[in-house]
Image (tube, rainbow, N blue to C red):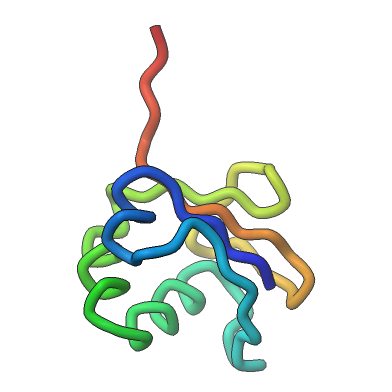
Amino acid sequence: MKILYFAWLRQRIGTGEEDVAVPAEVTDVAGLIDWLKTRGDGFQEALADVSAIRIAINQEFATLDSKIDPGDEVALFPPMTGG
């Protein structure tokens, strides 16, 4: 699975993207975020407030209960404002 991190998430985690082998029991976005938090302090800090994070799966907006598959691209980013 490819995971993309944007803005302050990228800064706190220390990378803009990574390819990971997610455990088989991780089947939705909430599970993915919980698993990512176990990967270190930067992940815990960046993902502490899930309400401040938006998610896209394969470039489509998603929610915490959205299902994920091993070949998906998951993007995590802060809310955006337009102008």
